Amino acid sequence: MKRIAIALVAVGLLGGTAIAANAGGSPSTPNGVFYLSKHSVATLSNATFEACNDLRYGYQVAGGPLTLVGVKPVGCTGPQGVPTSGATIGPFKTNTTFRVFLIDHSCPAGTGSDTGPGTTYYSDHTSTSSNPSADHALVTGTNPSNVKIMDANLGCGNTSTNSVPTTIGNVEVTVTTGTPRPTGV
View 1 (tube, rainbow, N blue to C red):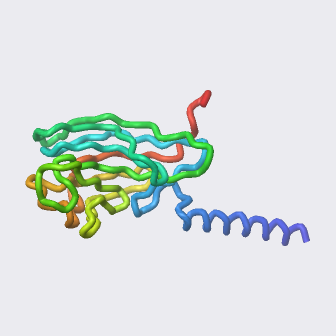
View 2 (view 1 turned 45 degrees about the horizontal axis):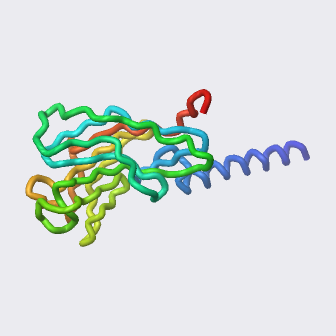
View 3 (view 1 turned 135 degrees about the horizontal axis):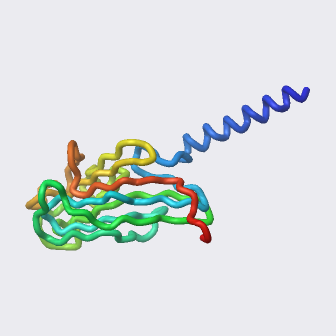
C-alpha cells in the first residue's frame, strides 16, 4: 500500500510539473514571453544596438508599464553594433512573466513617416502597429535566450509588415531567467 501511495504522489508531482510547463511555467517560452518564478531574478545582458533609427529597448512585466533600459539616438552604428545597458528584473513576491521590447522612435505605427511617437515591437511577436500587428522578433535558445528585434527600417517601410531578423537584429539581448535572488534581498 505504501508503494502505491508513493507512486501516486510521484505521478502527481510529475503531472503538476508537466501542467506548469505547458502553462508557461518554464524559464522561457518559444513565444517570447519569459516566465519568472517568485523570489528569482532575470537578467538582460550583452545588449547591443545595430541601426540608424532612434531606438529604445527595455522590458514589460505582466502587461504593466514599459521599463526603459537602453537608448540609441539617430545615427548609424558600425557592423559590430553599439553596446548598451543591461538590467536585472525582479525579484517579485509572486510568479510573473515579462517580454522584451524595442521602440522605433523614428517611425510611428502604420504611417510610413518619420514623425510621431514610434512603433513598439515585442519579443512575443506582436507590435503596436494596428494594421495589423507586425512580427519583428526572433527568440532562440532556452535559458539563456537570445532575443533579436528589428525596427521599421530606414524610411519606415516596415511598420505594419513582418520583418523577423534572419542574422542580426536592431537590438539584440541575452535573457537569462530563474537566477536565485541576490543575498540580502
